[in-house]
Image (tube, rainbow, N blue to C red; front, side, top):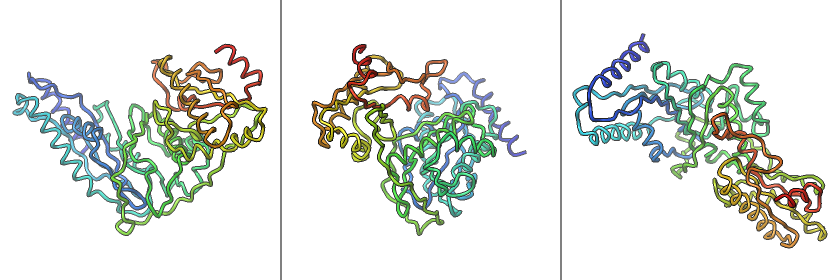
Length: 397
């Protein structure tokens, strides 16, 4: 009954607004659910980024916002519908926009007080709660879930203590679908902040482990029709005091291993081994890259007669920009190998952009990148420069 009343109130508000000849351009209605992982083994939440403020202000001008407390038993904390009363429709547009931002600031300030109440962490169940909260406003098509959480769940069907960071993401997603454990996310965008942003006593994730965690959540969300965008938003740089929150179990992280190197084969360094900051040739984690490249470096140094060809590739995009970016990234790997001790004359570089023989189609029917596929095209390949494959590529470049 309550949901029916809320839905009616919202529809009445929309009809109300459209019937008035206001000079204020009312934003399209937007439904947001904010999933807050304010718990032990995590850094404090950063709630005041421009993206957060903008999204929330849009909904406080015209829309709906729910808040989910993400812990071992996630629960709905609040849910509110925001409309502009009729008597204010003729007000100064700047004043109306300012009012929406003030409401957003007040709401965001209040979120700092939402803290875990139950032991462990179940982020997947929090997604269920977020999706369910949208039932209150079935007529709002624009839906967004903002997750601020480590994503390192420790209970129920998605328990990362069960060595999930060493498992195949697609297999995990398929098993969860078989158990009907993922909510329907069609038409919903999930904006994820602070993924993997763990704090002591939970050991920090390496870049590879963080990449795996991201791949797992991407597979889960996309498996049920959702879209996920991960933010590089930094935390508040202050670890939550474990003594102030219910306990969360420690997830044992899989051991780090170097990529094996076989000079007869093409060695692929993808985003798990060599990851660059978006649209640059700068590494996210230079130390991790050195670890990944060392087996290849040791082989090349031990075989002075061997010449390696490094080929950079990218996801689809602007041809000129992608060619340049792929060249720069191949050059960055060359510089790292030289810093380890590989003679520069044993290394050739080439950038093929998205026109390499290994490229897989990574756009949908509308020409938009499909991140799960695009990430597989962002790589640097290493091969014997005297091999038939390398000679053919060099001659046709």
